[in-house]
Image (cartoon, rainbow, N blue to C red; front, side, top):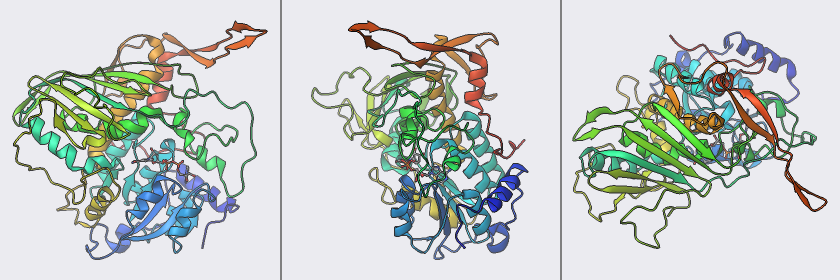
Length: 500
Ligand SMILES: NC(=O)c1ccc[n+]([C@@H]2O[C@H](COP(=O)([O-])OP(=O)(O)OC[C@H]3O[C@@H](n4cnc5c(N)ncnc54)[C@H](O)[C@@H]3O)[C@@H](O)[C@H]2O)c1
């Protein structure tokens, strides 16, 4: 039976179950079908949550399997996906879908706005379902840590974050080159994107609009604080709003920084700092620069991994052009972004996701490839990344080769990405922020420190005279940082406990 939007009593039941520690009525498919023992020739039963945009592309790339359930809060925007998979049952509320299809489904694809990834993915993991979750994996550092830990406790499931470049040949090749010492020791790296290509630097709309038909606004809001509906937020534009998205940084860093994180084996940074165009209480700025500092890591293969600073640029900012890059060659060749490793012997540059690595000296290293290649991953396309996850879902847990962006990798990496967002949100402290990654806290923000954040930029020409009437709020910095690291969920929403 398809879920009915007005079926509030059932939703209340599931909501209460969720709040009461995820006491779902369903029998996990591990019990029914023996998770992890799907023959490669058998099809997985997959459900998708958030299917109007990227989720549809992900599911189409999984078209080899049975897509049995589709959930979206906006049935108009999702109609294309409903048409593409007419046999799938349709839902507004993912909790109802997981409840009703729990015994049939093997795997969940999450492609909602960033702020709801964690609740959906965490619930799916606790039900022993394989999870493919879009990037950024989560909206907060704590949520990333939680998904990492939960996945650790469920070795029977296969996980993958949706940064498709991670399955690509390029990132593997550049790792092999760097680990062979081809560019020497790297103490400086740069990463960049031309995003945002959606509105940022916005204030909260002053007007409220009527909620459209075939739409569930409260479910879009999910665990975030309630606010009146306005069409500006969803689809797509939620990216620029702090409560729902993570701005250009969170949107693109999981693609652009992935090669740097992986090749330099980074882990948690020790310090971050950022600057940007105007950032306000509502929305990410139009352009940002962030610096991360990392301590030395243990030598790896033939290379030393000394202290390194990693820089981020978006919204039009770019690193200085390196020596050796020919005039006329753009730093963004693929319309997305790129990365650069400045080594003691050579400089390596690559496109978004690490594709097309090349050395600025023009040398082509003769390093024999040895890392596992995902078939078909020669460019930035959907398909191979999703199919590699499906392969892993079907492999026996005892001998499974996890997909490369599994949560043990993607969780800590995503924590680093989200710290880039925090560098901007806390830029009003005007200092390098020291990060204690293990304990998820800044060590140099005092309990009484405050920061000013713009709420309303009131520049106007009044009777032909420029007039400034900028409204600022003073925030307690430590409380703000703690809230950004671990969000307070709205009443009725909670995450499973952090495994010990
Ligand atoms: N890997 C990539 O190349 C790539 C590209 C685009 C987007 N993404 C990621 O995919 C995710 C979705 O982005 P998008 O561009 O598709 O956004 P979108 O707004 O176009 O689509 C999101 C869909 O999720 C639905 N939705 C929102 N909240 C929901 C909820 N609580 N329950 C059910 N459905 C819900 C929306 O109605 C919409 O249909 C984001 O995390 C984004 O970063 C990844």
